[in-house]
Each structure stands twice: as structure tokens, then as C-alpha cells.
Image 1 (cartoon, one colour):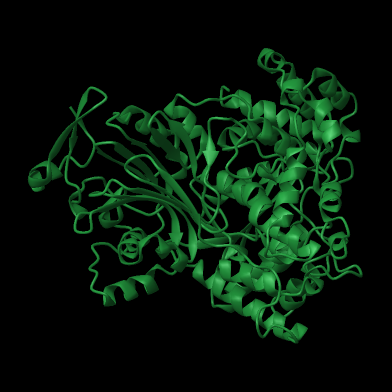
Image 2 (cartoon, rainbow, N blue to C red):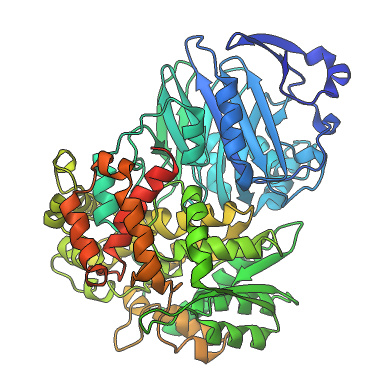
Length: 638
């Protein structure tokens, strides 16, 4: 007999005891809802979810859900829970952030409403929503945002998500109808992967968790491979690099009816261009609006029952977050920076700028230095933590930084998203007056054109120019008329989600660290879409993000504003030499790599002959991109 809820509740809640047969195992379901009678220690909110839903009386695999829940442990190392009923099984791993009591346990079940949920994320405005729901007569048994979602769904249906400020993915089920609702936040900050089953579906917060569940088709997806090799490793939803796993797009609700029918609805999209009253606004007015929204966004992300720190790179974005927190009265703020050894004359840290900010605002600053000896061993664990292969050099930087930061705090704010939202990249100015936006965008962003892709991969993966077709289709969608706005919308809604946002979530959650991104507050994103693009990508040597930089002068030192644009520099993965080159050769020469044959050996040899010659327009190593794909596949036994 397998007991899947709290054993203490057997005598306390015997009236709700149910017996069902699952996978030829008698499973004892104890108490659809038993509140604080669970005997499992501390309970919290966050951070890994999984489950399985079956139709036509097919049994769910409890063992598969248990395996998936186990793989998700790093995302929620503090606690776990499972719930099983006929045709459904749900698992949850938890990280201690909110409601440090037994009442916030997940899966959360509300017997009065007949609803249950597994939830990953945080609803920043849950207290306001709780007050509104209480005025409608709803009574609460916890102080968690998870319960607010249940009550909000009961009150407003799936439109409740349009009221949420936050980052979230969840699976919610209706006890009486058998309907299940999947949802992902507007900017895809929290992940949601799924795989189809015979008469059913299985889902998880990470792709490796789904692999642990078993039965996944792991053949390479040709469309995703084209995106990985061409679109700078950005693989837009619903695709992933393997055919058997899909991902729920951002701002999407998927409803699964009891008969298996699936209905998807996009509940939010950004419209670029001025709104009523915007014409004639001065630059000063836009600056004030921007700072006002950023103040609210930063303040919202202070919601926690634990200290909140900041990942401080020394750039404008993270420095502004520190400045606004200090302005709001946060004292003794914990800030963190990381640096790598220099290679080929390229500096591997930006400590001189983070030091300026830390000194100005009196933070408790931590500088983490990484030498060459420490990076290769960390790469193995970093790649295993990736839900999908992510080629950007700074993945390893965030991973190693997150390990150290997690020893001090459980929550940090980070500056991700500002470049995409406020036009900080070098490819935006050429788009201002582009007469051929698709080709102009591809020329400056794509790692390879279709001809080189066709040389690089095995013939069976060569078909259409999927990446260029995707960009052309996205540019044709109404809601962004100017070429620059088309590029900004694509990067905000697609590239941002499947590059920096995914990178930060994967690497931070690998260490049980929650990263919050105020630049992706949807009010900030909507405001940025209204600001004239000339104020974002002003030419004349301003380097992009002009309006953000000018507004920031009122808060942070000018030295970090007028500096050259930086990023998380990891020179050893760009200028590949010595032990790093040997390390990559070993991966590519392993039997599984040669047998797989996804990348043509002639192309591999071309890259190995002179790695430093093969750099993408985004200043990344083509060799590292090929190696990473193979390394990721090997790490996950694919």
C-alpha cells in the first residue's frame, strides 16, 4: 500500500479516505484537503511542478511522477508533496520564500471549492487580490499566494490570470468536472514543458524531469535544430530540440477537457506604438513615467519572508535596481558580482563598475573570482541543469554565481530584459529605417545563414529556412508597424524568453535560488512599447537604451552609465585555447558523437582547425555552439 499524502491525517480525516487502483498498486488517498494537519515540517512557496493526466480510464503512472518530482529537487530542496486521484497525479518541490508555515503546502487542495493546484512562481500582488476576494466572501486557510490563485480562478475563471502581476506556471484542476488548466506567465519567466502520452499528457518544470518520466521521443527536432544553429540557439515555443517534448508558449492558457480536447488561449500581447495621449510627450515626461514604473516593479519584487539580494554586474540595468532599492529604504543590501580570467586581451570581469555602485549605496558586496581550473568541472553540472542547450557564454557565469549567492540569500533581483525592452543591442539602430527588415535582422542576429546550416548538419535535417520563415511570419503579425518595433517585439516576446530568461531561471533554480526580473514587469514592458523608438535606440554614440540611461542619471552614478556596453564576459568560451580546446575535442570525438552524426564531421573539422576564426555576428564561438549541443545530448543520455 502506497500512502501519498500525510500519514498523520489517516485518523484525523478518515471521512475523506478514498481507495483507487493505479498501475496495479493500491494507492491510499488521504484527505482531499487537510490543511495544517500534514506532518512534513516547514512549508513554503516555489519552485518545481510536474504531473500526468490520462483519459479513457488509462491508469496514471505514479512512479513516473515520483521520478520527475525527484529530478526537480534542486528547484525546491526544502520540501515535496504529491497528490493522486483517478486519471491524475501531481508532484511538487518547494523552496522557502512565502508562508513559512504548514498551510502553504503543495499540491494545494481546496475541498470547499473543489479545486487543486501545483504552482511555480510568485504573484506579487496577491495581497491586494486576497483583499478583493475576501470582500466577496472568500475565506482563506493560508497566507500564501497559491491559495489566492485558487480563489481567483473560482471567482473569475481563467481570466483571473489577467489580474496577476508576477512570474508563474501552474496546473490547476477541477475536482468535479475533471478539467485541467495549464498556464504560463506573460513573459515566460517560469517554464512549462510537456510530452504527449497515449490518451494523456505529462508535464514538468524542466525537460530533464520529463525524460526521467520515461517514454519520450528523443529524436532531434529538425525545426528546432535550425533555430538552434541559426537563430542564436533561440528555439521558440512550442518546439524544443527533441521531438517528444513541447513547451507552453508565454501568456498562454491550455485547458484540457475530460475527453482530452485541448484549447489554447493567448491572454496577453504587447502592442507597439503610441497610445492616446502619448503624442507630444516630452523626453522628460517619458523619463519620469519610466522611473515611476520601475520603482513599482522593484518594490513589487521585494515580497518575501526572506532577504532579497541583487545580482550586480555593474551595468546600468542592475545598478538601477540597486539604486531604486536604496531609494526605497533598503539598507545593508546584499549584492553579488562574478569575474573570470582574461583571455586574448579580453577582460573577464567588470568589478570596477560594480564596486562604484556598491560603494555609492553602501551594499554588502560579494565579488566572486573564477579561475580556469574551476570552470571546466562546473560546466558538466551547468549543462545538466539546462532544460535546453543554451549557447550564450554567460550561462556558466550565472550558474557559478548562483551557487555562491545561494549560500547567502534565497531571492535576488536581476537586470535581465532591459536590453530587449529598451533597445540596448547593436542590431536595433539599423532597423530604424530598414527597407528590408527580415534580411536586415537576420544579417545582424543569425549565427549562420541557411547555406552554412546546410553544410553544417546531416542531409536529413536540411529542409526549409525555418528561422528566416519564423522571423518573416512574426514581423507580419499586426501590432508593430515600424521595422524597429517589429524587431523589439520579436526580441521581447521570443528571444528574451528562450535565451536570457530561460538561462537565468535554469541556472539560479539549479541552486534553489529564485531570480526576479523587474524589467519584465508587464507594466514596464507595455510602457516601453509606447515610448518612441528614437528615444530607445538613439544614435550618435549613445549605445542603445538612451531613455533608460538618461532616466537612470537621477538615481545612479554617471560612471556606470557612460561606460562601454558590457555583458557577462567569459573569454575562455569565445577564444578557445589550450585545455578548453582539448575538452571540446574530447566531447566531439566520443563514440556517441560520431555515431549520432547530427553535425557533419567535415564542418566540425573546419571549426577545430581555427576556432577563433569562426565567431558569429553576436560575438560567440561557432565551435562552442556545436560542442554544447553534443555535450547537452550526452549529459542527458540522448
